[in-house]
Image (cartoon, rainbow, N blue to C red; front, side, top):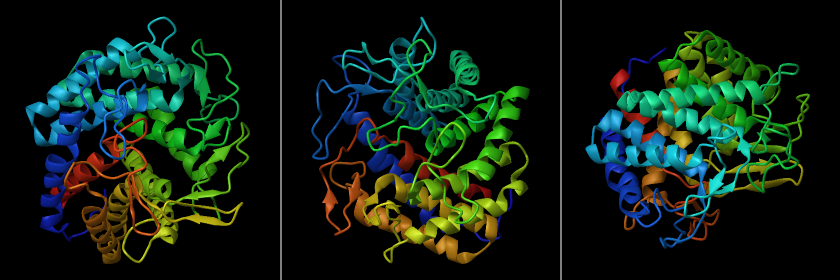
Length: 400
Protein backbone atom coordinates (compact mmCIF):
# COMPACT_ATOMS: atom_id res chain seq x y z
CA UNK A 1 0.00 0.00 0.00
CA UNK A 2 1.33 3.42 -0.93
CA UNK A 3 2.25 5.52 2.08
CA UNK A 4 3.42 9.08 2.47
CA UNK A 5 6.58 9.93 4.43
CA UNK A 6 4.61 12.09 6.86
CA UNK A 7 2.87 10.88 10.00
CA UNK A 8 -0.62 11.40 11.29
CA UNK A 9 -0.53 14.00 14.07
CA UNK A 10 0.34 12.25 17.34
CA UNK A 11 -2.59 13.87 19.14
CA UNK A 12 -4.99 12.39 16.58
CA UNK A 13 -4.06 8.85 17.60
CA UNK A 14 -4.20 9.79 21.31
CA UNK A 15 -7.60 11.43 20.91
CA UNK A 16 -8.95 8.46 18.93
CA UNK A 17 -7.98 5.99 21.66
CA UNK A 18 -9.43 8.26 24.32
CA UNK A 19 -12.66 8.73 22.38
CA UNK A 20 -13.05 4.98 21.96
CA UNK A 21 -12.35 4.16 25.61
CA UNK A 22 -14.16 7.11 27.18
CA UNK A 23 -17.20 8.10 25.12
CA UNK A 24 -18.08 5.30 22.70
CA UNK A 25 -17.63 1.77 24.04
CA UNK A 26 -18.35 2.47 27.74
CA UNK A 27 -21.81 3.71 26.70
CA UNK A 28 -22.58 0.35 25.11
CA UNK A 29 -21.12 -1.59 28.03
CA UNK A 30 -23.08 0.32 30.68
CA UNK A 31 -26.38 0.99 28.90
CA UNK A 32 -27.10 -1.69 26.32
CA UNK A 33 -26.89 -5.16 27.94
CA UNK A 34 -30.40 -6.52 28.51
CA UNK A 35 -30.03 -8.59 31.65
CA UNK A 36 -33.73 -9.42 31.77
CA UNK A 37 -34.34 -10.83 28.28
CA UNK A 38 -30.78 -11.44 27.13
CA UNK A 39 -28.43 -9.89 24.62
CA UNK A 40 -28.78 -6.14 24.18
CA UNK A 41 -31.64 -3.69 24.28
CA UNK A 42 -33.05 -2.81 20.90
CA UNK A 43 -33.17 0.95 21.35
CA UNK A 44 -32.11 3.97 23.40
CA UNK A 45 -33.80 7.15 22.25
CA UNK A 46 -32.16 10.49 21.57
CA UNK A 47 -32.73 11.60 25.15
CA UNK A 48 -30.89 8.54 26.53
CA UNK A 49 -33.99 6.58 27.60
CA UNK A 50 -33.94 2.79 27.23
CA UNK A 51 -37.00 1.68 25.26
CA UNK A 52 -37.93 -1.64 26.86
CA UNK A 53 -39.66 -4.01 24.47
CA UNK A 54 -38.06 -2.53 21.34
CA UNK A 55 -37.28 -5.10 18.61
CA UNK A 56 -33.69 -6.30 18.41
CA UNK A 57 -32.24 -5.75 14.95
CA UNK A 58 -29.73 -7.93 13.15
CA UNK A 59 -27.61 -4.98 12.05
CA UNK A 60 -27.34 -3.60 15.59
CA UNK A 61 -26.25 -6.96 16.99
CA UNK A 62 -23.80 -7.73 14.19
CA UNK A 63 -22.23 -4.29 14.54
CA UNK A 64 -21.92 -4.67 18.32
CA UNK A 65 -20.11 -7.98 17.75
CA UNK A 66 -17.80 -6.40 15.17
CA UNK A 67 -17.06 -3.32 17.30
CA UNK A 68 -16.05 -5.16 20.43
CA UNK A 69 -14.14 -7.86 18.55
CA UNK A 70 -12.16 -5.28 16.57
CA UNK A 71 -11.56 -3.10 19.61
CA UNK A 72 -10.31 -6.08 21.61
CA UNK A 73 -7.74 -6.90 18.91
CA UNK A 74 -6.23 -3.42 19.27
CA UNK A 75 -6.86 -2.43 22.88
CA UNK A 76 -6.87 -5.86 24.62
CA UNK A 77 -9.37 -4.71 27.24
CA UNK A 78 -10.93 -7.91 28.72
CA UNK A 79 -14.29 -6.14 29.04
CA UNK A 80 -14.34 -5.71 25.27
CA UNK A 81 -13.83 -9.45 24.86
CA UNK A 82 -16.61 -10.09 27.37
CA UNK A 83 -19.00 -7.93 25.36
CA UNK A 84 -17.98 -9.59 22.09
CA UNK A 85 -18.63 -12.99 23.66
CA UNK A 86 -22.05 -11.86 24.87
CA UNK A 87 -22.94 -10.68 21.36
CA UNK A 88 -21.59 -13.85 19.73
CA UNK A 89 -23.57 -16.13 22.04
CA UNK A 90 -26.82 -14.22 21.60
CA UNK A 91 -26.44 -14.12 17.82
CA UNK A 92 -25.78 -17.86 17.61
CA UNK A 93 -28.72 -18.65 19.90
CA UNK A 94 -31.30 -16.32 18.38
CA UNK A 95 -30.46 -14.80 14.99
CA UNK A 96 -29.50 -17.88 13.01
CA UNK A 97 -32.32 -19.70 11.25
CA UNK A 98 -31.42 -23.31 11.96
CA UNK A 99 -34.20 -24.67 9.73
CA UNK A 100 -33.76 -22.75 6.47
CA UNK A 101 -30.30 -21.25 6.92
CA UNK A 102 -29.18 -17.64 7.10
CA UNK A 103 -30.18 -15.07 9.70
CA UNK A 104 -33.34 -13.29 10.72
CA UNK A 105 -33.77 -9.56 10.11
CA UNK A 106 -35.02 -8.77 13.60
CA UNK A 107 -36.32 -10.30 16.80
CA UNK A 108 -38.87 -9.42 19.42
CA UNK A 109 -37.35 -8.14 22.64
CA UNK A 110 -37.64 -11.64 24.14
CA UNK A 111 -35.54 -13.13 21.34
CA UNK A 112 -38.34 -14.69 19.27
CA UNK A 113 -38.15 -14.13 15.48
CA UNK A 114 -40.12 -11.08 14.37
CA UNK A 115 -39.09 -10.48 10.74
CA UNK A 116 -37.70 -13.66 9.22
CA UNK A 117 -36.75 -12.34 5.78
CA UNK A 118 -33.25 -12.98 4.47
CA UNK A 119 -31.84 -9.50 3.81
CA UNK A 120 -28.47 -10.02 2.12
CA UNK A 121 -27.15 -6.80 3.65
CA UNK A 122 -27.71 -8.40 7.04
CA UNK A 123 -25.98 -11.67 6.15
CA UNK A 124 -23.00 -9.65 4.94
CA UNK A 125 -22.73 -7.87 8.28
CA UNK A 126 -22.75 -11.15 10.15
CA UNK A 127 -19.92 -12.39 7.90
CA UNK A 128 -18.01 -9.20 8.65
CA UNK A 129 -18.56 -9.44 12.41
CA UNK A 130 -17.85 -13.16 12.67
CA UNK A 131 -14.65 -12.82 10.65
CA UNK A 132 -13.35 -10.25 13.10
CA UNK A 133 -14.52 -12.29 16.07
CA UNK A 134 -12.46 -15.17 14.72
CA UNK A 135 -9.45 -12.84 14.34
CA UNK A 136 -9.93 -11.73 17.95
CA UNK A 137 -10.48 -15.15 19.51
CA UNK A 138 -9.70 -18.00 17.11
CA UNK A 139 -13.26 -19.28 17.67
CA UNK A 140 -13.80 -21.96 15.02
CA UNK A 141 -17.58 -21.71 15.08
CA UNK A 142 -17.35 -18.05 14.10
CA UNK A 143 -15.37 -18.74 10.95
CA UNK A 144 -17.50 -21.79 10.10
CA UNK A 145 -20.71 -19.79 10.35
CA UNK A 146 -19.20 -16.92 8.36
CA UNK A 147 -18.27 -19.36 5.58
CA UNK A 148 -21.76 -20.88 5.65
CA UNK A 149 -23.29 -17.43 5.14
CA UNK A 150 -20.92 -16.73 2.25
CA UNK A 151 -22.07 -19.94 0.57
CA UNK A 152 -25.73 -19.05 1.09
CA UNK A 153 -25.24 -15.61 -0.46
CA UNK A 154 -23.53 -17.16 -3.45
CA UNK A 155 -26.21 -19.81 -3.82
CA UNK A 156 -29.29 -17.62 -3.51
CA UNK A 157 -28.32 -14.00 -4.13
CA UNK A 158 -25.60 -13.97 -6.78
CA UNK A 159 -27.03 -13.20 -10.23
CA UNK A 160 -25.14 -15.56 -12.52
CA UNK A 161 -26.70 -14.09 -15.64
CA UNK A 162 -26.47 -10.35 -15.06
CA UNK A 163 -23.88 -10.21 -12.26
CA UNK A 164 -24.24 -8.66 -8.84
CA UNK A 165 -26.38 -9.61 -5.87
CA UNK A 166 -30.13 -9.53 -5.37
CA UNK A 167 -31.39 -7.76 -2.27
CA UNK A 168 -33.63 -10.00 -0.21
CA UNK A 169 -35.68 -13.19 0.07
CA UNK A 170 -38.35 -14.62 2.32
CA UNK A 171 -37.48 -17.04 5.09
CA UNK A 172 -37.41 -20.03 2.71
CA UNK A 173 -35.36 -18.11 0.09
CA UNK A 174 -38.33 -17.36 -2.13
CA UNK A 175 -39.15 -14.05 -3.81
CA UNK A 176 -40.20 -10.97 -1.86
CA UNK A 177 -42.28 -8.04 -3.09
CA UNK A 178 -40.67 -5.55 -0.69
CA UNK A 179 -36.88 -5.71 -0.88
CA UNK A 180 -36.06 -2.49 0.98
CA UNK A 181 -33.69 -2.12 3.89
CA UNK A 182 -35.74 0.80 5.19
CA UNK A 183 -38.70 2.96 4.23
CA UNK A 184 -36.44 5.63 2.69
CA UNK A 185 -34.96 3.21 0.15
CA UNK A 186 -36.15 2.49 -3.37
CA UNK A 187 -37.68 -0.95 -3.84
CA UNK A 188 -35.14 -2.22 -6.37
CA UNK A 189 -33.46 -5.59 -6.85
CA UNK A 190 -29.87 -4.35 -6.62
CA UNK A 191 -28.43 -1.59 -4.45
CA UNK A 192 -25.08 0.04 -3.92
CA UNK A 193 -25.43 -0.30 -0.15
CA UNK A 194 -25.77 -4.08 -0.11
CA UNK A 195 -22.93 -4.46 -2.61
CA UNK A 196 -20.71 -2.16 -0.51
CA UNK A 197 -21.15 -4.28 2.58
CA UNK A 198 -20.74 -7.56 0.75
CA UNK A 199 -17.47 -6.08 -0.49
CA UNK A 200 -16.52 -5.20 3.09
CA UNK A 201 -17.54 -8.62 4.42
CA UNK A 202 -15.79 -10.62 1.70
CA UNK A 203 -12.61 -8.57 2.24
CA UNK A 204 -12.52 -9.51 5.92
CA UNK A 205 -13.41 -13.15 5.31
CA UNK A 206 -10.73 -13.47 2.62
CA UNK A 207 -8.05 -12.40 5.10
CA UNK A 208 -8.75 -15.43 7.27
CA UNK A 209 -10.10 -17.86 4.65
CA UNK A 210 -8.30 -17.31 1.31
CA UNK A 211 -10.62 -19.57 -0.65
CA UNK A 212 -10.35 -19.54 -4.45
CA UNK A 213 -14.06 -18.90 -5.07
CA UNK A 214 -14.15 -16.16 -2.46
CA UNK A 215 -11.15 -14.54 -4.13
CA UNK A 216 -12.89 -14.68 -7.50
CA UNK A 217 -16.07 -13.14 -6.12
CA UNK A 218 -14.22 -10.42 -4.21
CA UNK A 219 -12.34 -9.46 -7.35
CA UNK A 220 -15.65 -9.48 -9.23
CA UNK A 221 -17.14 -7.15 -6.63
CA UNK A 222 -14.29 -4.66 -7.13
CA UNK A 223 -15.08 -4.73 -10.87
CA UNK A 224 -18.81 -4.25 -10.21
CA UNK A 225 -18.07 -1.04 -8.35
CA UNK A 226 -15.71 0.22 -11.01
CA UNK A 227 -17.95 -0.72 -13.95
CA UNK A 228 -21.55 -0.61 -12.68
CA UNK A 229 -21.89 1.44 -9.50
CA UNK A 230 -19.46 4.36 -9.81
CA UNK A 231 -20.93 6.91 -12.22
CA UNK A 232 -18.49 7.29 -15.14
CA UNK A 233 -19.22 11.01 -15.45
CA UNK A 234 -19.54 12.28 -11.86
CA UNK A 235 -17.62 9.57 -9.92
CA UNK A 236 -20.45 9.54 -7.36
CA UNK A 237 -22.00 6.20 -6.47
CA UNK A 238 -25.33 5.41 -8.05
CA UNK A 239 -27.53 3.94 -5.33
CA UNK A 240 -30.34 1.83 -6.81
CA UNK A 241 -30.58 -0.39 -9.86
CA UNK A 242 -33.03 -2.73 -11.51
CA UNK A 243 -32.05 -6.31 -12.25
CA UNK A 244 -30.38 -5.24 -15.51
CA UNK A 245 -28.22 -2.58 -13.81
CA UNK A 246 -30.25 0.36 -15.08
CA UNK A 247 -29.86 3.19 -12.56
CA UNK A 248 -33.05 3.96 -10.62
CA UNK A 249 -31.77 6.70 -8.33
CA UNK A 250 -31.31 10.47 -8.37
CA UNK A 251 -29.68 10.72 -4.94
CA UNK A 252 -26.03 11.53 -4.21
CA UNK A 253 -24.95 10.16 -0.82
CA UNK A 254 -21.77 11.93 0.23
CA UNK A 255 -21.25 9.58 3.16
CA UNK A 256 -21.41 6.48 0.99
CA UNK A 257 -19.10 8.11 -1.54
CA UNK A 258 -16.35 8.71 0.99
CA UNK A 259 -16.90 5.33 2.70
CA UNK A 260 -16.68 3.45 -0.58
CA UNK A 261 -13.54 5.35 -1.60
CA UNK A 262 -11.52 3.56 1.08
CA UNK A 263 -13.43 0.26 1.34
CA UNK A 264 -12.92 -0.31 -2.38
CA UNK A 265 -9.19 0.30 -2.02
CA UNK A 266 -9.04 -1.97 1.02
CA UNK A 267 -10.71 -4.79 -0.94
CA UNK A 268 -8.29 -4.49 -3.84
CA UNK A 269 -5.37 -4.35 -1.39
CA UNK A 270 -6.48 -7.63 0.20
CA UNK A 271 -6.20 -9.15 -3.27
CA UNK A 272 -2.80 -7.55 -3.81
CA UNK A 273 -4.29 -5.46 -6.62
CA UNK A 274 -4.58 -2.01 -5.02
CA UNK A 275 -2.93 -0.24 -7.95
CA UNK A 276 -5.94 -1.13 -10.11
CA UNK A 277 -8.29 1.05 -8.04
CA UNK A 278 -6.05 3.84 -6.73
CA UNK A 279 -7.22 6.37 -9.29
CA UNK A 280 -10.91 5.52 -8.98
CA UNK A 281 -10.71 5.63 -5.17
CA UNK A 282 -9.31 9.14 -5.36
CA UNK A 283 -11.97 10.16 -7.91
CA UNK A 284 -14.74 8.96 -5.59
CA UNK A 285 -13.21 10.83 -2.63
CA UNK A 286 -12.94 13.97 -4.75
CA UNK A 287 -16.59 13.64 -5.78
CA UNK A 288 -17.59 13.43 -2.11
CA UNK A 289 -15.92 16.80 -1.60
CA UNK A 290 -18.96 18.43 -3.17
CA UNK A 291 -20.63 17.88 0.21
CA UNK A 292 -17.84 19.41 2.30
CA UNK A 293 -18.97 22.32 4.48
CA UNK A 294 -16.84 25.25 5.61
CA UNK A 295 -16.72 23.89 9.18
CA UNK A 296 -15.03 20.70 8.00
CA UNK A 297 -18.10 18.46 8.19
CA UNK A 298 -19.70 16.52 5.35
CA UNK A 299 -23.40 17.10 4.66
CA UNK A 300 -25.76 14.16 4.24
CA UNK A 301 -27.03 13.94 0.66
CA UNK A 302 -28.49 15.60 -2.42
CA UNK A 303 -31.59 14.54 -4.34
CA UNK A 304 -31.46 15.83 -7.90
CA UNK A 305 -35.03 14.75 -8.69
CA UNK A 306 -36.51 17.24 -6.26
CA UNK A 307 -33.56 19.64 -6.34
CA UNK A 308 -33.03 19.44 -2.59
CA UNK A 309 -29.86 19.28 -0.49
CA UNK A 310 -30.01 17.65 2.96
CA UNK A 311 -27.49 19.59 5.00
CA UNK A 312 -27.72 17.72 8.32
CA UNK A 313 -24.40 16.33 9.59
CA UNK A 314 -25.05 12.67 10.36
CA UNK A 315 -22.77 10.85 12.79
CA UNK A 316 -21.72 8.06 10.42
CA UNK A 317 -20.95 10.40 7.54
CA UNK A 318 -18.47 12.35 9.68
CA UNK A 319 -16.76 9.16 10.87
CA UNK A 320 -16.35 7.88 7.32
CA UNK A 321 -15.13 11.29 6.18
CA UNK A 322 -12.20 11.14 8.60
CA UNK A 323 -11.12 7.70 7.36
CA UNK A 324 -11.75 8.49 3.71
CA UNK A 325 -9.77 11.72 3.85
CA UNK A 326 -6.83 9.97 5.56
CA UNK A 327 -6.93 7.25 2.93
CA UNK A 328 -6.93 9.82 0.11
CA UNK A 329 -3.94 11.54 1.74
CA UNK A 330 -2.07 8.25 1.90
CA UNK A 331 -2.80 7.48 -1.75
CA UNK A 332 -2.12 10.94 -3.15
CA UNK A 333 0.46 12.42 -0.79
CA UNK A 334 -1.50 15.68 -0.90
CA UNK A 335 -1.42 17.40 2.49
CA UNK A 336 -4.84 18.99 1.92
CA UNK A 337 -6.51 15.61 2.45
CA UNK A 338 -4.88 15.22 5.86
CA UNK A 339 -5.93 18.76 6.79
CA UNK A 340 -9.52 17.84 5.93
CA UNK A 341 -9.32 14.71 8.06
CA UNK A 342 -8.06 16.69 11.06
CA UNK A 343 -10.77 19.31 10.60
CA UNK A 344 -13.51 16.67 10.30
CA UNK A 345 -12.24 14.94 13.46
CA UNK A 346 -12.27 18.24 15.31
CA UNK A 347 -15.86 18.83 14.17
CA UNK A 348 -16.85 15.47 15.64
CA UNK A 349 -15.18 16.15 18.98
CA UNK A 350 -16.72 19.60 19.23
CA UNK A 351 -20.25 18.94 18.01
CA UNK A 352 -21.24 15.26 17.78
CA UNK A 353 -19.82 13.64 20.89
CA UNK A 354 -22.14 13.61 23.90
CA UNK A 355 -19.51 14.28 26.54
CA UNK A 356 -22.04 13.98 29.38
CA UNK A 357 -23.97 10.81 28.54
CA UNK A 358 -21.56 9.11 26.14
CA UNK A 359 -21.75 8.05 22.48
CA UNK A 360 -22.49 10.45 19.62
CA UNK A 361 -25.68 12.23 18.68
CA UNK A 362 -27.44 10.99 15.56
CA UNK A 363 -26.80 14.30 13.81
CA UNK A 364 -26.40 18.01 13.98
CA UNK A 365 -29.19 19.82 12.15
CA UNK A 366 -28.43 22.15 9.27
CA UNK A 367 -29.07 25.06 11.66
CA UNK A 368 -26.46 23.76 14.11
CA UNK A 369 -28.95 22.36 16.66
CA UNK A 370 -28.25 18.93 18.16
CA UNK A 371 -30.73 16.29 16.98
CA UNK A 372 -32.14 14.51 20.04
CA UNK A 373 -35.20 13.22 18.16
CA UNK A 374 -33.39 10.31 16.50
CA UNK A 375 -31.90 7.45 18.47
CA UNK A 376 -28.69 7.36 20.46
CA UNK A 377 -28.68 3.57 19.92
CA UNK A 378 -30.98 1.43 17.84
CA UNK A 379 -31.72 -0.47 14.68
CA UNK A 380 -29.32 1.71 12.65
CA UNK A 381 -27.48 3.65 15.36
CA UNK A 382 -24.64 1.34 16.33
CA UNK A 383 -21.02 1.59 17.54
CA UNK A 384 -19.65 0.52 14.16
CA UNK A 385 -18.80 3.69 12.21
CA UNK A 386 -17.32 5.64 15.10
CA UNK A 387 -15.45 2.66 16.60
CA UNK A 388 -14.01 1.91 13.19
CA UNK A 389 -12.91 5.51 12.71
CA UNK A 390 -10.97 5.38 15.97
CA UNK A 391 -9.38 2.03 15.14
CA UNK A 392 -8.45 3.13 11.62
CA UNK A 393 -6.74 6.25 12.96
CA UNK A 394 -4.78 4.12 15.41
CA UNK A 395 -3.86 1.49 12.81
CA UNK A 396 -2.79 3.98 10.18
CA UNK A 397 -0.69 5.84 12.74
CA UNK A 398 1.34 2.67 13.22
CA UNK A 399 1.89 2.19 9.50
CA UNK A 400 3.67 5.50 8.90
